[in-house]
Length: 185
Image 1 (cartoon, rainbow, N blue to C red):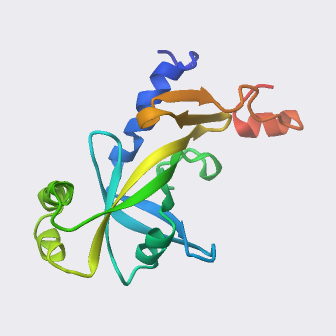
Image 2 (cartoon, helix red, strand yellow):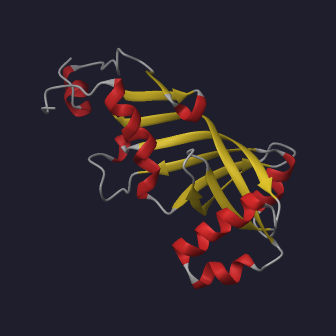
């Protein structure tokens, strides 16, 4: 693929699905019973089906929020220092269904073994704390932004379907704006 050739949807889909692999934590947004939002971050572990697992304390607002509203938004975003433009940072935002995995269940043990393998002694210690809880976040829909006028929606089983959100791109009001956005409108 040359710099002049636009990537196909078939090329963009695996790029979008692989994007979270560059991160050890995700930005997490939840809401409480009254709908008040809360944002923070959590260390996560992905599985082969593209689900994200977080192990969080009862002291974290997210724990109570996920128990009363089992939905969350997970954000993975390009580091500011690596981005070509702060306004066009690559990012993947996933709308997720959340479920708590109960301590001692086979899935709980397998995921926690993965956390320990990846994060070592600290996870071994945290694993035994009874006020920590494991949640599985299953993405149901996602938006992948590659840059200006490069927004894609992912949906379906394991986010296996992709579509360009707006094939017209941004509509500049002037040639100066077009040049600033990196297009030649």
